[in-house]
Image 1 (cartoon, rainbow, N blue to C red):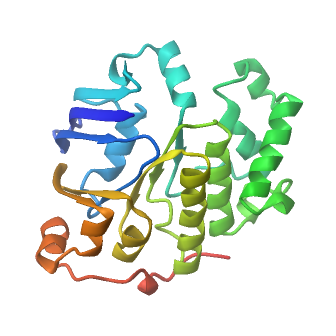
Image 2: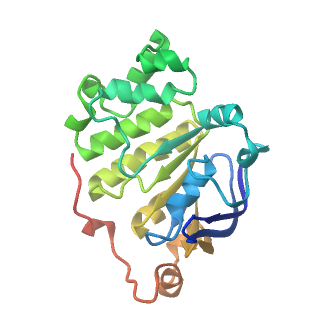
Length: 262
């Protein structure tokens, strides 16, 4: 179980990104965080694995205080916490297979990883991950030769290589068209249901949220202002929607999103 307790993040310029957040992610849950850009979603996800250092509060992972962990302890903790990024965060000049293998960096000797020397078992695991994501034929292409949807599949395969118990997905479909958005979320749903990997995912579009979430948290100005179950998010009223997204907000279908690749 992941527990976030009284989490606050204040940046050096005085910007308060998160304000006293508390919630938990139960084992096997698909929890979605919603809110406008700037609401604090990305900061929250990055605080959980300490890509960003929290200002106050605690992150507890299976009873271990992540915020108090040493560098060596954090390396062990991060093995269990996969991360998927909005802009893929791939090494464009490297092959797809090498990018996927980078998900094993927490397990191999650092010197070996610098030389791209991975055990044969890890290479076979990487091929299996690509097979599972439906792109085994892309293994030896450069990452920048792939479409946006294919690149995000590589990102999911890389996270899968960590053998994670939870995956943090930061706007994973924001740059993809509706069909590809559903494809990526379908893969995450399978990992959630078949592998029992907990998913903590930030999204914008209500129809995707209603389709995939088991529970929802709404952020506004760094604070939690909405909590809802799958049933409650499907019954969300216009008043609740505007409380999260502002009085000027209107419900927009993901079908209006227009960018991406096959």
